[in-house]
Amino acid sequence: MAEALKGSDQNELLVPLGFAKDIEFECNSKKELEAQGLLMKKKEKPDWCFLQIEEVIGKKGKPIAPKKSFQISQDGKRISTKLLMMKKAQLTTMVKSIFIIHVPNDSMRANFTSLLISSF
Figure (tube, one colour):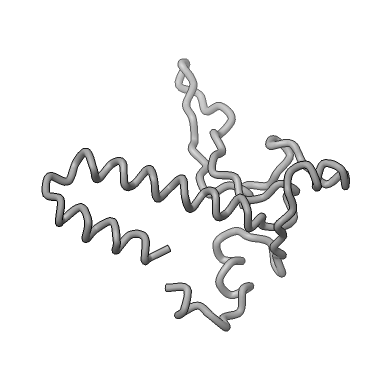
């Protein structure tokens, strides 16, 4: 999939998904961003900084603050390649765990796992 997207205009790919136009990528650590004064609090970050946003309904049936998870930006302006790779590893582990439990056949499990990993 990555090969098929090589050379594509990132604005054509990412803007329709909610990312800012001309988004940049960075690989700084959290400490480096904090020292530069660029680190943002989770509540301040725009929605595109998270791969998952879950709407939450409170006990009285009213919506409460959405649960944001799988953060991919530390500063709310650029995508962190470090965070993105960590999220890829987390998601791969989660999916593998699900299929180890639910796929009865070892060869089926191995085929699916290799297909899944190659798609990243």
